[in-house]
Image: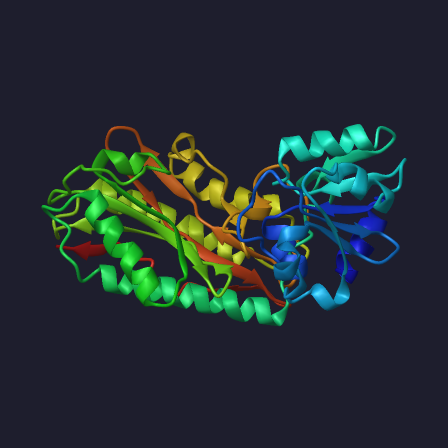
Length: 359
């Protein structure tokens, strides 16, 4: 919270207003049992003591949060106007960063109660708030990556041919939980032509011999995220173009990883990956950014995308996941989570990036 207040001051903000969601968990350890229409908000002044406003019926839970000893607690009861209760904690003419996840009704209520103030989303005003991880966070991200790797190794031993995409997705989810995840966020299984949809939702399509299959999966382990992608082929008879495309993506991913070092702009990671794919003649089929940050959520700043000039800093963690998607035919993506070190990059995913053959 101290560091966040300092960053708010450097950004010219009067402070931060943090509502339930990942920012509140990150700063205080508090997560309401249920996020409802009742206002919960942490006011973190750039200069002053932080205060957490909660509905009175939820105060006992808030008092047991990890960050509670460093907070002043205030409450309100049904029938009161919570925005008027919050107003004295705010500078009437101040500019505040507010959680991206704040409900519109709460932001509108604050604007009405504080007509002289203004609010800016945290992604816009403090995009790097959670970007640089401490050693304890890096350890958790590494453990989540290792659990995802164990999941991938396990999935290579199950039969693919003759089973539905959703069956493989269920296998992935079960193994993520088996290897220590508390929450499964996604299990993308894109077989054959469905692999050309980067965010394909696993469905009832039956996987056939000769299919190329994109596997993208992850979730939370000990509060921190995993996210990895590998592409496999069903049967040993692999078409030449599948091998070619997979090798192009593998080289793009490796080249981007080798470009990671402190001071390099985020957009440069996207540029070097995209250059490899474009030079191979597949540039129009790489249709998304090269990477995204990861931490207590699986997608957060920084983003490896053209126009993002933020320099890489030791402790930043993000995905490197170039892909090629040929509509109606197949797709290939390879993804690792990477952290920036003092001298380069370190992967949190160490499974083979070669094209795996499954049955």
